[in-house]
Length: 375
Ligand code: F6P
Image (cartoon, rainbow, N blue to C red; front, top):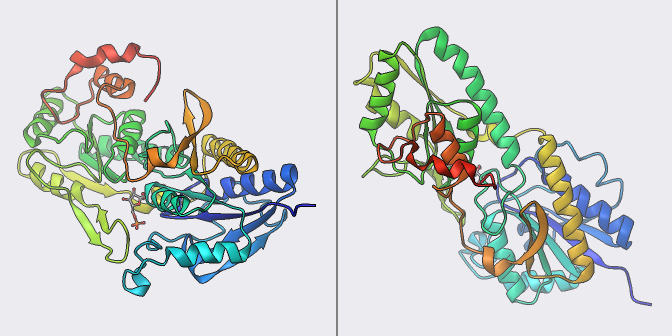
């Protein structure tokens, strides 16, 4: 009689609300439906290099649905193909060897583009890998949503709501900076949900003069406060992205952040209103996931377990047209999904008078509001 399936789970890259909900769903589903043995791999791919793994039984994956972070730990500094701790050596052969030794039949890798690119490379080396799309940034290709995004948007929206009341009371211009790396999804969705007057995203380099014009127009028309929601990856026309740190041993070493302060400096000399900035940072990644993210993470995890059971490897769980599917990791590796400017949400924001800091982008493209999918 053949032995039971032995499946490893790892979480890689930045932490994200919903990681534990996926671990729970993959684990419970594999144990209950497939009588599999589940192995937790600690701190992302690092655990496969150092062989830091532990058996996860039903109790271990129970009671973690609502927990933020990841019970397995994670790392955004460990690429086995360029392992910094060994001077940039390719230790992928060791990873493959260790997986065989541990007796893993498959690995479920929960992560963003960095983790899934490594997962793809390991799949090319013969490992049976299933990917689950995670990131608050929502910037993965081949899936309409990643889990964690809804929670980040909810947190950022609540922050904007709170800034609205203080902005009104003091008649100030409030600039709130969201995360999102090179994509503007969080700023677009939170800015629209919070009724920001100006939303600045990396996909639309902003014109400072246009931002000033909108703020002045509001001052003139008696609306003595303005909320600007700016994505960390946004930049002014002809300007540069602002990096707050360089993490040398990370596969993606640039850490964006701080553009809000540059924008504030540009506006300060031009506007009568006082200006304040709030950089939300990692608050967007912490804490308990929203109900939507818990459900999405549970559905992703259960689907990933089913993929393992039917041997659907080298692929990632994907959500398209509200339906779960599996797509090849080749489609996902090394790519980012930006906000399409003809999307329904951009059109809707324009239709209610939101400025994107560009005079060229006015409500004339609001015809897109009638499109069916909210992207
Ligand atoms: O990818 C998620 C994310 O939070 C980005 O939005 C942000 O740019 C980055 O990670 C921050 O990384 P770190 O946690 O290393 O500061």
